[in-house]
Image (cartoon, rainbow, N blue to C red):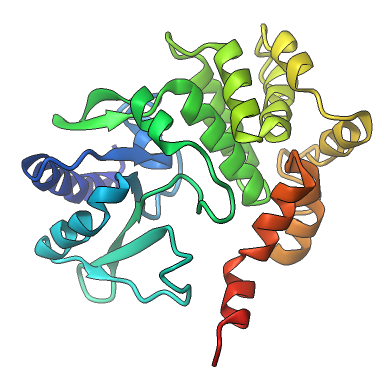
Length: 277
């Protein structure tokens, strides 16, 4: 395992031990989850800048206190607390270096992209992280989360997302019909369809055609999504400024205009500009 992973996971294990003692359920997300579930201990997924994890709303403040007891310091945020659904904590290490943990009480900020988190928690299962207890999301929830997270972030790490999802889909208990059901429930059908398309055409993942048919967006949207990836594996818009990237991608990946409008309206940049001086 890369030294970078070892250091991050050591401190996350310390937090999990305190969380267990405080009866706080914790779900590792994104890289922290994937590296300890679908990747082997000697495999390199690339840079892991921080550790993201989910806690219940009732444990939000308790998780902050536990991190502070371990020496973590809350990171100042320009986003008003009423709109903020995650909170960053730094742990200073050697000189100017630091470790960053992101505490989430929702997979996506609920004023931007609401989902049923009570149902999500009910689908989690007991597990371990480096020998310490935690909970894990269902494979179907992980698939939809990774797919839609990549879409919201404009497919900037497209190749890595495809490989992550290939591995998630290879899990023994992951159901394609359940992924379709979850994508429909979360209104991320287009994003999931796009990754099914990439899995079918880039890594020859067989068996996804029926799921693709069930999720297929309108033909013009389908064509635009299929045109996004470049022959080099990234996206053709990678050279654009991030706001221009969003202007290209977001209208394609949001299932409903109301979802897109909510996402834009509650963007932290616009929220900060609307805030009274």
